[in-house]
Image (cartoon, rainbow, N blue to C red; front, top):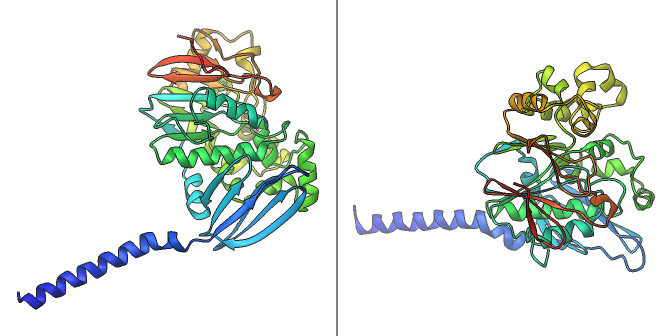
Length: 375
């Protein structure tokens, strides 16, 4: 090959490399950053709510009682300024939140809590106390996993802040080999299904200011709504099942599986009406008192024995089940370490605990950050 031919090949290769680099990196320099100020010194703040429409998005937020609306591109960034400071690319975050799994293995470190119910400040204090996040609220748990067993919604007045901070941590954790998992609880599904009996009065003001029903702020056409609809009801990590309320013998006897439960909620229960759910035997089982978002049998069913629990564990192929939903004063261990209760009454806004699982040892940790060995 002639010297000229070699030069031509080198030039072509360099041009191709330059094109690849430009395609990959140049959009970052031209991405529009949309600033969202969330001020509450002279009124309420809330949002942002991101409505998706093909290549476009509309963001709505309230700052000092005033509603702001802006149409932007789906490839744009949003920079939030407020209690949650977070810059994200809509397209990239959308892809991340839709990529939900219900089974993980080889996870060494886990932190777990449940039933935040809008108590954002206490939620953050607990995570900081155990160094799950740093002093600025950023992910600090390296390749560890954080599991939130449902019910961020209702009661408290900082639901939106809680949800955005969970998404921020999920984004940051994914970049460090860790994970953040949000499981759906009964109050989450109530809101998605337009049962708004327990929302804080602040969100009645939000409805009035936006002109949008609270459930539709989390509708199927929103970023937050699509994320929530992709979240599982039951999650398995290593040999542990996590679920908001519990897995019952009725679920065992009807042959339910983790994947099947998650699929049924996604396609048959969320966005469905009560009459249709009650008319279907399987839907009624899963959506009512024997199902995974309402069950309280571990705490109230006196006929349950260790043998019953062993049957449930064997059916779902796990050694432990961790639940929320039923409020305790601290993390509790039941049925000879088989069942753990992680709803530590955070909803009261006063105190709470994390369940910490590290290298097969189980601990509880409160606002002082001290880990107390469970076993």
